[in-house]
Length: 167
Image 1 (tube, rainbow, N blue to C red):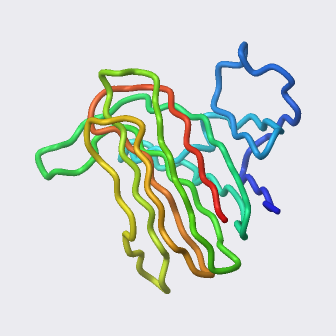
Image 2 (cartoon, rainbow, N blue to C red):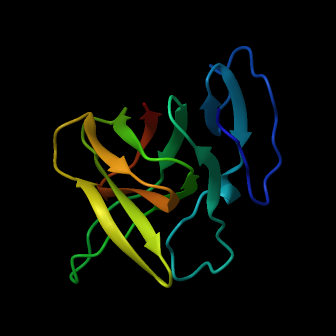
């Protein structure tokens, strides 16, 4: 059972055919939810009004598919991401294995993901996948608590699909 929350977003439910929809969307089991661009967190120092997307609460046997877009990518001289960054916040209610897969459409772009656990006032990266091969996938045992998942592009822009599964 996935409890689905969006922060500061309008939600359109039940797209029977999303092939003509050109925005970001989230698929929870077989239902589609539009997520306006303002709901994605974009790490851009010139825009302080960006939003964090809260994707819900995970327990065992959950599945969530997020379809989004990286509008730009790059790595700056400090070896930090310099383009678009999408961040998804969620809570895990019980110990479970979490499987994450990231795939994208533009073969000349390179997307990465990282999973962080939030501990009091700090966060710790517990899973990271980068590089040129696609799709990227990995798994991690997660425990009750709060987490965020970061998707970023080290090069180029592209639409992407992020699958999160627990068992």
